[in-house]
Image (cartoon, rainbow, N blue to C red; front, top):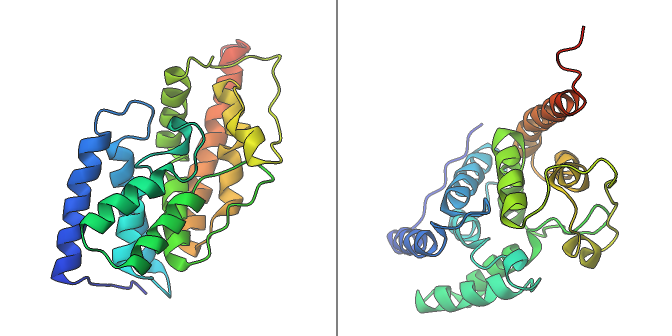
Length: 230
């Protein structure tokens, strides 16, 4: 059963202003963490929420989705609080209630994948929905495109056969990893399917995960020159 939630007129206006704020900050970003990523995550989150028994607070979900990459740790010296600092300043200026600001900041600080064996669990349904929405955008065709955009931005090679994937036990290990882009599939992307929080998220992730597997199969066939052999 699809669930519909509404917001007050004031909340709608805050969300619209936040859209403009985030778009202005991120529209020229080139690593796959741009405005279009934000928009897809917001749309994913709204779709997931509609299919959940408990759809959560739509205002918090939208703000969390819109602001989740406003100052990503990957571009701010590994600082997990960089995004919440920017978000707090912005939302305070919009006269958002302190409890809502804290909730949004908790989502921002907890949303990222932090390594194969590192925990990054969300405590609330709103956080779980936004986290699933973000992870879906790292899967499938768009996830592949974003992986190579990110790798190219940081001068990472496409593939180095002699460099094996690593299992990161801590966020520090994951944060400091400089591996090639194909390793990123094994170190993060292929692990996301089993870390989804919601039923809708898991269903979509299964489909997009299969697309990743198909891409890698074709990649290695072409890499080894086996795609044309009889």
